[in-house]
Image (cartoon, rainbow, N blue to C red; front, top):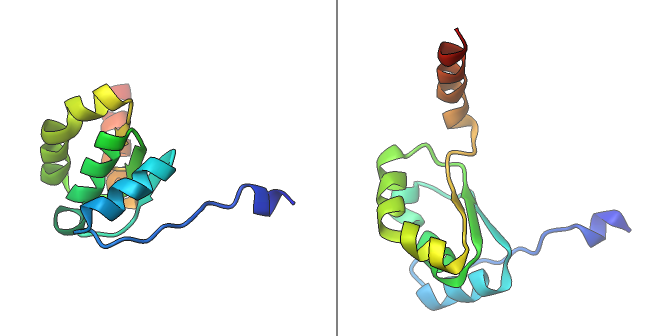
Length: 105
């Protein structure tokens, strides 16, 4: 059945458990992170994905934290082939649409 065939695998690990996070990243194509505040709980998740080559997606709107993650792990992710994608949630959509509308006019 399609619902079973495409059901995601759910892994749970403590955000401070670097080894556990790396194991998750090794077993994953994409890690979807929906637990914030990201600056407090998610830096190690980004690090594990960047190091292990798993794509990372979150719904944060924490601009400073995202900038810090890009500086710390951008080159690591590039080497491993991981893609780090932030701002994929509701908090960032209004500002994105406003900027799009401004550019269009």
